[in-house]
Amino acid sequence: MSEHHAAGARPALSLGIPEFVMEAREPVPCREDPDAWFAEGLQQSDAEALCEGCSFLTVCETFALERPELFGVWGGTTRRERERLRRARVGPVAGAGAAAS
Image (cartoon, rainbow, N blue to C red; front, side, top):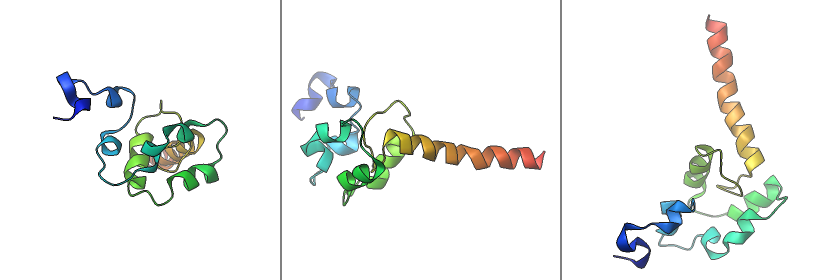
């Protein structure tokens, strides 16, 4: 059993760090320098550059889209971009339901 699982505690998960990041066998950029992903004022292009080439890009974006409370860069997206993506997902569905009535 690894140390971060000692006594049933999973402190990384309680901090919001997803299991797929903590248990990845290959290098994950955000695990090397986590502070870079929480810098103030990052633009969408900055977020994409931070996550470029990460093998968990899609998984991480999905993780973040399901958790609106998350701050920082996740899956190559900023909080603002994730809010836009969530609205885009909901918008057409709501419009389609109203048109069918």
